Length: 103
Image (cartoon, rainbow, N blue to C red):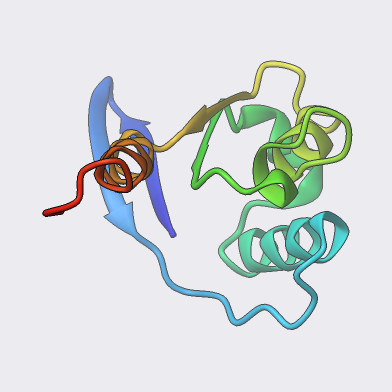
């Protein structure tokens, strides 16, 4: 997990760690993420300070009704979820290659 944050008006990006997840449902991923953030000093009450979430694209993450992004938006109304551009490019390339025999 990476975080992007401001310090004195300067943008910083930091790797903050990996989290082992045993429950791969949206609720399980949300709880694991909240637990991870709490251990890093960002409690659920301060989740309103979280404004962005970038993920890969399976329904459990980007689902419109109950994906992780939607669940977190219930906690932070300003949160914007973005499907990672690298994952989107990989999907586009792999799907395009299916129609080209030599690929």
